[in-house]
Each structure stands twice: as structure tokens, then as C-alpha cells.
Length: 181
Image 1 (cartoon, rainbow, N blue to C red):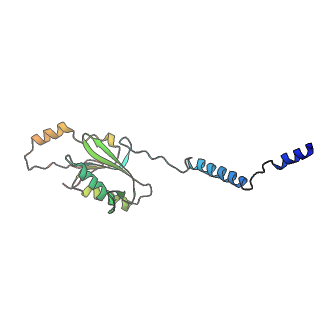
Image 2: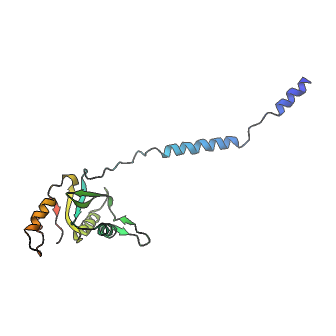
Image 3: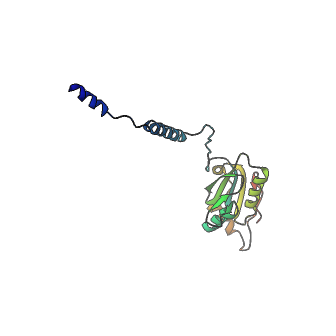
């Protein structure tokens, strides 16, 4: 009788399901690939931006420019507006745009893609310079190192000596593009 009991125990042992090997292999492959996708690629490059980093094009809006005017400028001058949404895309050649503020002037710093053509760079620069909202434009500068923007005290002095219809003078400064008044 013992012989029969052993044989019945052997027959009741579970055999692995024929597809279990395939399932385990797929799970290992999926989780292995997922873990690799979380690793940075060797050709990824960290791009630093900010007011303390050199920018290809830096510009400041005139005092009194509203946030709505700045948004519209971003959508239509340095961007391509999307008619279906309120969003916009960057102009060709633009890599990053960062909002900045110096001496109470709101502005933006733009860096171009390394492969941006001279035509793309000139197109963006000309659109910025021609905007009536722009006070001053700089090329290849660190925004935090710009020292020639007047602060509020300087503006009060200038305004106190001006007749109501006088316009500010725009003298060219090295590295500065002076927009049309």
C-alpha cells in the first residue's frame, strides 16, 4: 500500500505551466528596459539658463508694459501663436527663453540652438528690436551683469527735467541694439 501512496503523491505534484517561462522572461525584459529608460542617455546635455548665465539675446520691456502685453509679445513676436489654444511655440532656432528682471525692468533672455542659422537669429532679433514694447536689447551678455539700465531714482531725475512731450534719448552702447523709438 505504501507504494500506491507514493505514486499518488507524485502524480499530484504541480507541474509548471508551459507559459510561465515566457511570462517570467517578459516581466524581466519589461522591467529591465524600464530601468534603462530612466537612465540619462550619454548624449543628453544639461542646458543652464537664468539671469546669471550668458544669453545670446537679452531685452527689456518699457516701463508700464502690462503682463497682457508681454504675453501677447511672447505669442506673436518671439513665438508662433496656436490658433486653437492660448499657447504658442518658439520661433525656429530658439532653444530657451527665460524671464528676467533688472532694476525693475521686466525682460527676457533668449538662447539660440547651437545649429540655429544666422537667418533664424537675425529674424528673431529684428522682430524684438522692431517691437514698440522694447526699451533696450543686448547681445551675448549675462543679464545680472547689465549695469546701464536706469533704476527708479534715475528715471525720476530724468522725468523731472523733461517737458511733457519730450522722449528719452537713445544713445548706442557697445553690445546694445537700440530699438526705434
